[in-house]
Image (tube, rainbow, N blue to C red; front, top):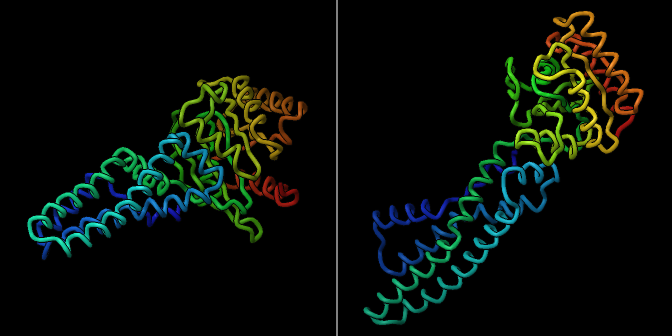
Length: 326
């Protein structure tokens, strides 16, 4: 996510280390020493202010991804703790700055030690929250940037049916492709050009035939994309799979159809280059039954590994999407 790239939040231990290094370089007097402590703590948590601003304007898709990995309550608690610490630290800095200018030497020394300890302790209370916020920023920085207004084609389906291969064939996206289930663990975004229109093509992790509440973290990332992103969905099935029967794959299709809130849903019977005629015929027939039941709009037979075939399917779906925007 581009907006998170410049945000930095230090942990409590990292802030103490910065303060220690500044002391080692030397401070002129107690006043400048106290100011240094205050400034390091405030500057090291400036990112928390930027993070709170970013989260307030975040789209539901990103929030859904965040809530898979983090407790929203812990995030809010961390932000609140840091905000209070920053406000109180400024107040204490003003108080003890005045005291250091009017007190005699021994009293000034005690005021300095007391003020420094009180300011630092404010941020010590936020120690756990700072770790949560730092990890959240790192998580956001690794998320793909998704344009909510761009036409979007979302690939969905069980593990190892060829979603990543399709994305690589039709777009700039480069998800990992391997011959084992759950290769894709994150949302991957690529782009394709369709008659001068830039289209997002999104690869999602594989789904199993089970309720959302029983899904693992990887599957819930796919659900977030399917529920929160606008666009058309191409659900791929693999008639050659020994991992999951066509019947079970179409059970997953039923679950996906229930998540889409009226989005256009298509089925692609993939791996036509290696499937037998009997496998293709059976898979196509079963997928057509899903169309008749109103779960999907159309069934395609294709080999996603062949760029021309995958691009033909993608172009037709995107053309339909642009004619009937959601």
